[in-house]
Image (cartoon, rainbow, N blue to C red; front, side):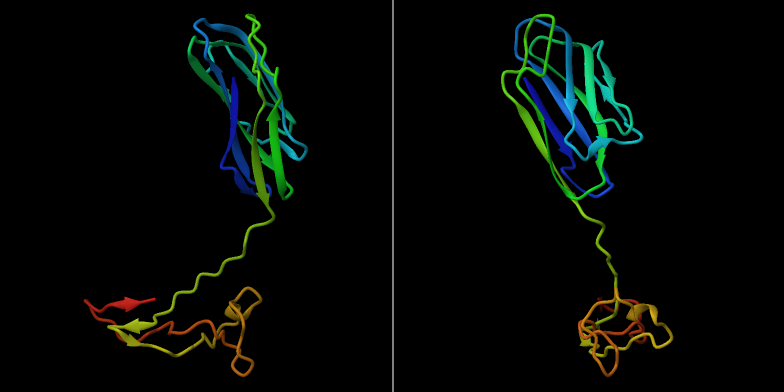
Length: 193
C-alpha cells in the first residue's frame, strides 16, 4: 500500500513543502526491488535544494531540482514494515494541486503492488499578505489613553499599507487609538497595548 502527504499542505506561491510517500508492506515477507514513479501535478516541481531522501533499505531516490517527477528504485521493505521517501517541492502559481499515485504505481520483485490510489492536495496561496504591526499604549494602570496621536514627523505610517479608513481631516486611522509615547511609566505599572 502507498500513502502520501504534503507538509505543510498550504503554502504561499513560490514557497516549499515536503512531499512524503510511505510504502507499507502488510505481508509476512520482505518486498524487494520496490520501485515507483510519482508524476507531480502540472505546476508543482522538485525544489532546489531537493532534500530528497529515503529510509527504505537499498532504495535510491531520484528527484532533480525543477523536475516534475520523483522516483524510488531498488528498495527493500521489511515484512509488516513501512519506509518513506521525502522530497521538497514547490509551486509558483496559486491554485489547488492534487498529487495522485494510481493503483499499480508500486512494483516489486514479488509482484506486490498498491491496489488502491493514494493522493493528497496542496493549496498554494497567491502572494504574502502585507502586514503592519502597530503597538500603541492604550492604557496605563487602567487609565484609558483615547488619543489618536500620530507621528507627525513621519509619513511612512500614512502609506497605502497603513490601516484604513483614514479620517479625512487629520489623515489618522480611525481604527487606532492610544499613544506612541504614553507618558511616564514606572516599575509596577500595568500597560495595555
